[in-house]
Image 1 (cartoon, rainbow, N blue to C red):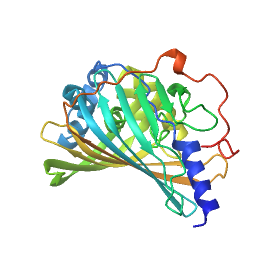
Image 2 (spheres, rainbow, N blue to C red; image 1 turned 90 degrees about the vertical axis):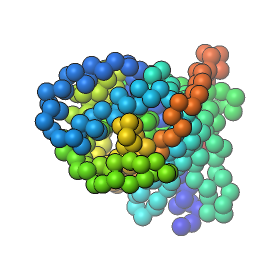
Image 3 (spheres, rainbow, N blue to C red; image 1 turned 45 degrees about the vertical axis):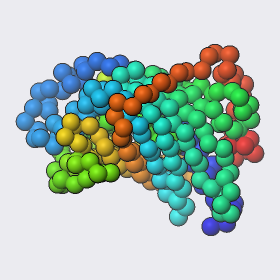
Length: 286
């Protein structure tokens, strides 16, 4: 792949998936009550998956490692992230690493992303934004429901997607990073997930159900004996608006270090950039 192709792939990833956010902060379990009858009798795999988001909230906090692989037109790009998440406060912090260029030199500085109810904050965003300023994005404006928009899938939102599983199979027992887990495989429906999600996530997931090429999300989920996600791989498909080509996205999430301190603080208003952000691909820097 030549440099021009790689830079185009990187800009595609940025344009479609380098803003990360989360749609909401409600910590209540009204979704669980709303779907109780629907889930009843659906089988242990579906029940376990449905409760995965609640198990994360009960756990409080964890460390997270993310990997998002995008494929379009024969080009494959991987974006990686690492950080912490507080599931009760719905706040998270990720350091996101964009792909290197073909020579091995980094094209972008690491981007710091703060996840908050209804908003995403980014530092080192590029695109004409001063290095010492944050960019704030209202996640309600994102057509993918924040599932791929930051080069990472928010852990709690990813767990909420599992509420959309109508059927799932228990694959077997295995281990993830030395921890015993149960492996489940199935397909989640984003429309269904939006109906049963916590109040603040419903609109974002409903938008994702319309924004993706399909509302069906194949997944492999690995839950520990407390029902907490240890590994989750979800696959999304959408149409690149500019090239009208299909983009396949595989998002992999690893959660560990449950109970670790997660002191995430949002930037003050004075540190938030209020100017214009350059269009991707126009030489603006991202």
